[in-house]
Amino acid sequence: MIEIKNIMKKYGNGPIAVNDVTETMSKRVTTLIGRNGAGKTTLLRMLSTQLMPTSGTAVINGHDIIKEPHKVRNSIVSIPQEASPIGILTPYEQVRMYLIGRRFSLSDASLAARQALETVGLESSMHSPSDTLSGGMKRKMFVAIALASNAEIVFLDEPTTGLDPLSRLEVWSAIKKLDGNILLTTHYMEEAENLSDEVFLQDAGKIIESGTVKKLLKRFSGKIRVESQSPLDGSTMLGGMHILYDIVENAEKHVKNGANVKKITLDDLFIMRGVDLEY
Ligand SMILES: Nc1ncnc2c1ncn2[C@@H]1O[C@H](COP(=O)(O)OP(=O)(O)OP(=O)(O)O)[C@@H](O)[C@H]1O
Ligand SMILES: [Mg+2]
Image (cartoon, rainbow, N blue to C red; front, side, top):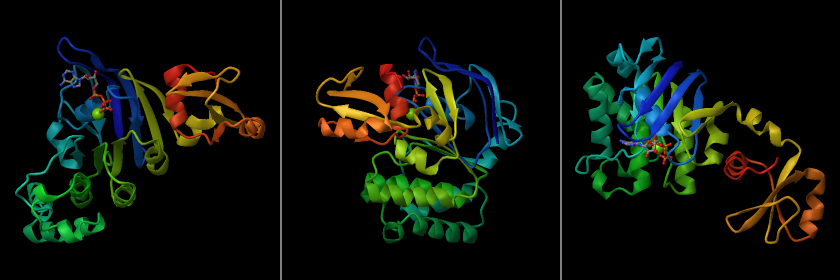
């Protein structure tokens, strides 16, 4: 359970990265989405006690992040966006070392490390130096750390960025196996749809929408996205395409005219926010 209270972060003379956010996150998998620079990482870093808020606070599983950061740290694990392993250590050594740091006994740590690395599909490379792993394999190693740690809350900042589609599915299935509640960020809307019980949309530091994927897409119900090479009545140009939201009943007409018709996904929440389309 994460209760965020008027949290704010201003970087020196820089931007207000997180702007007066007050939210409760209590679902098993919560996903934070938002454009580059929206403030997702900043929020996650404050919640995981790595960055001091400028004002406001949050209570994680009953512990205040400012007054009781040690207690918060005992109940969470946080995998940063830019996490990189220690190159000379193998994944097995690294996961084990992390667990020993969390006061696992040597034998428990060894067992949990092996099991978690197998679960994320790293069984054949768990004894190779991390330097020799691909980017995706390194991401999986960090998910294994989260998996093995048995933390009550797991923070994952862009856990599947840069992974190939199959690796992404493997990481999703590993994430689904995590015991604790999870707060993750992603730019892959399919990932948000697949994993989340609740989604928070952050924009310019503020949370501007939240709810289940179903709720967020409700405003598009009965609609389709139409993409055409040529302008359509009421369309907006985006990425070299003319885009329009129209009712499902008009789908056939658009297809006959050579346009592409797409099912609504969370991507559309981004698209229509970015270009002020009518929907
Ligand atoms: N250490 C820092 N010092 C100054 N400004 C920062 C710092 N870290 C982030 N910012 C700024 O704060 C804002 C929010 O950045 P943040 O990294 O939290 O966004 P994000 O939503 O995680 O973006 P992305 O999707 O690209 O990872 C941006 O304007 C960024 O430039
Ligand atoms: Mg980020």
